[in-house]
Amino acid sequence: MTMLRVALVQMTASDDPAQNLRDMTAQVRKAAAGGAGFVATPEVSNIISGSRSHQQAVLHRQADDPTLAGMRALAAELSVWVLLGSLALKTGDADGRFANRSLLIGPDGAIVAQYDKIHMFDVDLDEGESYRESRHFRPGQRAVLARTPFGALGMTICYDLRFARLFRMLAQAGAALISVPAAFTVPTGRAHWHALLRARAIETGCFILAPAQCGQHVDRQTYGHSLVVDPWGQVIAQAGEEPGVTFADLDLSLVAKARGKVPALHHDPRIEPPHDDAQQ
Image (cartoon, rainbow, N blue to C red):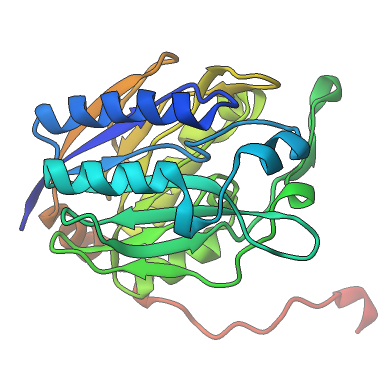
């Protein structure tokens, strides 16, 4: 398969998983009707809430999560691949933290791969805006590469975008596409979203698929601007700041062409760790 039509679902998730599932279902149906064979949703598609007590009340473990069950049934009904960018899921951990988990669903409704976000967004931004993701979510421990008929998919989530080593590892392991579902803040999105996504595409020679949350949520605002970037670093599709579906037609042969022009993935020399010359 050398051509693939993808669709990125951009949404404004609320703190009500049932409503978010209804919204997602409508958007995935629209994507399938538009000819997409692969549909991706943003990070935390099932809920955005800063209240752990509310999350405890409405979230589920993976085995009985209604959002996952609904999207698995929908993928099978429509015969499309669906990437649930991520779901917030209960884990049973003693400290009560959740998993921020991306799930790839095949066109038969089966779960093909799952990835838990490795890098936690613990930052203090300007104007008193602060995030401590590690208080609510436990970090994942391993990178994940999913094999599909249209090529290997490397799975990442949002803040992972700032850690180029993860992307390089995925590309060197065989990824032709890398997913970056996100809920980027507005300040960091304006400053870094486009630059980082293009850089990761250029560095890896991969297609980058980045479906995003947008707009005003219960307790935060997200940037939107879902992007598809080709292996040469060109933006080939972009959403705005409103919910909707963005389509892109991928020519998968461009992966080999880009890597043939700049074969940087094969040029890793052995480098000594940095040292302080002043102490020599």
